[in-house]
Amino acid sequence: MSPRPMTRPGGRSARVQESVHAAVRALEAEQGREALTVPLVAARAGVTPSTIYRRWGDLQELLSDVAVERLRPETEPADHGALRTDLEAWAEHFLEEMSSPPGRAYIRDALAGDPDGSHAGQCSAYAAEQVGIILARAADRGEPAPDAEVVMDHIVAPMMYRLVFRPGPLDATYARGLVEATLSSLMPPG
Amino acid sequence: MSPRPMTRPGGRSARVQESVHAAVRALEAEQGREALTVPLVAARAGVTPSTIYRRWGDLQELLSDVAVERLRPETEPADHGALRTDLEAWAEHFLEEMSSPPGRAYIRDALAGDPDGSHAGQCSAYAAEQVGIILARAADRGEPAPDAEVVMDHIVAPMMYRLVFRPGPLDATYARGLVEATLSSLMPPG
Image (tube, each protein chain N blue to C red):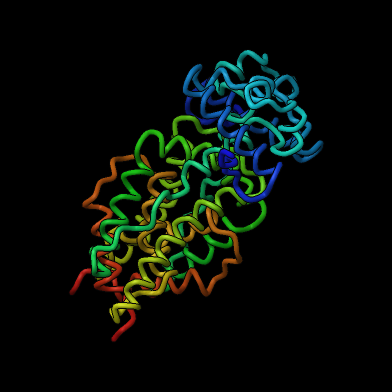
C-alpha cells in the first residue's frame, strides 16, 4: 500500500487553496502575469471559477493571498549566538528579500487585493514571529533585549516604510544602522 | 472687467486634472464609491473617456491620484516655539488624520493604483516636507535637532507601518512616545 499523499491540515478547503495557489504560480511562470484570469486559474486548478470567486472575491484578492504565502518565511532566523548578530543578519536578509524585484512585487500584490487589511496584517505577523524568536533566544542567553514592539517600530517599520513609500536604494548598511540605533539607544536601561 | 477665474499653473492639462478630480469627489459624495466609472467621471468633468484613459490608465490609478491630492497637507505645521512641542503636535495631528476612516481609505487608494510607486512617493514627500519645516524652525531657534531621515525612520515610518500593515488602535500617546524616543535617544550627541 503506497503512502497517502501529504495533505495540509484543513481537508478539502486546504487542498483547494493549495491547488489554486499552485495554478497561479505555474500559469504566472509559463504565461506571465498579464495572462492570468480567474477561468484560466480555475481550469488549471481543477475547480470551478465560482469556487474562486466565492472564496477570494476576485483575481486581485487571489493574487494578494498568493503573494502573502510567498512572503511567509521558510525557516527560523539563523542563530549566531548573540542578539546583535542575530538581529543584524535577520534585518539584512529581510531587507534583501523584500527589496528584490519579486519581493517588491509580492508586497505590492499583497496590499493591492486586501480590502480588510488581513493580508497586510499577516505580512507583519510573519516579521513579528521571526523577531519574537530572536528575542526569545536572547532571553534564554540572559542577554538584555529591547521589547518586540521597539524592534517592530524602529527596525522593521523603517525598512517597510521605505520599501513601500520612499523611492531609493536600500542596502545592508542601512539595515545594520537601524539595528545599531535600536540596540545602542532604544534599549531599556539595564 | 471682472477678474479672470483663477487657474493653477499648467494650463489645459492642469484644468483637466482639476475638473476630473472634482468630478470624482462630487460623484463619490453623491453616489458612493461603487458607482464610479470612467465614462461617468468623464461626462461629469466634460472630457472624453479617452482623455482619462490616456492620462490615468484606468479608474484605480485615477482614484489613487485623487487620494494623493487629498493627503496633501493644507497648511504648514503649527509653530509652538519649541522642537519637541512642534514634533509632538505634528505627529499627533498626522496620526489622527491618517488613522481616520477617510485617511485610511486615501492611503489604501493611493497604494492600490500606483504601478510605479510615484503616488506613494508623493505621500512620503508631503510628510518629509512638513518635517523639514519643523526642523528648519528648530535650527533657526538654535535648538539641537535630529536629522530629517531619523524623524522619517523613527517617527513617521512606525506610524505608517502600523497604519498599513498592523491592525490595532493608534492614539496620540503612541505618537508622543515615538517623539520622546527619538528626541531622548536618537539625537546626535550635543
